[in-house]
Length: 217
Image (cartoon, rainbow, N blue to C red; front, side, top):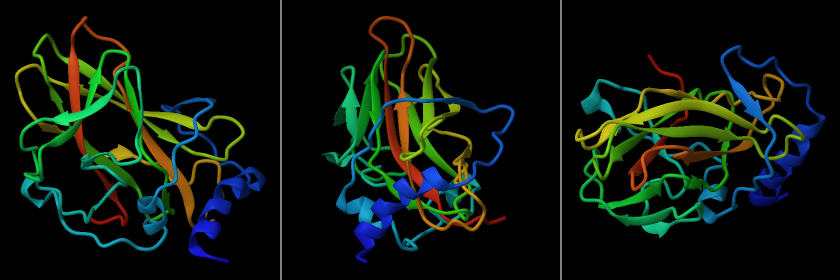
């Protein structure tokens, strides 16, 4: 079976797996969301090339970019709703290019699917309040395609602070075993970011969505 077909079959296979208990602080919903499959998705279904991209921020974990997660080639397979777009933002926190996902109030962006397994504990991203109206919350969710219910988990609300420029989020739990047994192997996930509320005219930039493929000290 080709790598693409094998990885695409993972989502359907999750329906037959025994679910693990949800963490007490997690909020799950069932949502009709179907993240895209891209060339980057296919490339993710093997151990990625990693680097200590956040070592300047005292994080020595090794990270890989999520598919389209630097927004340097437009949306890059991200599904945009509610007025979300990709626009020039100036050099980001990591100094890599000037494209970013722009989210006005009510907008969302959903990444293409990518493959993870139980070695992928968390991810991080950068945010910036654009218009300086006030601090604005960015809702970060993890999507688990193929689950019949509880297929979207609210992972964290990340605050974009007024007049602080680019900021790096804390580590956000990816929970790669949600709905699966330990040792299940590769499975598909996606990341969704949104600005569910805020002052009229507020807008946030999101950039550099980085996935940690191995737990490290």
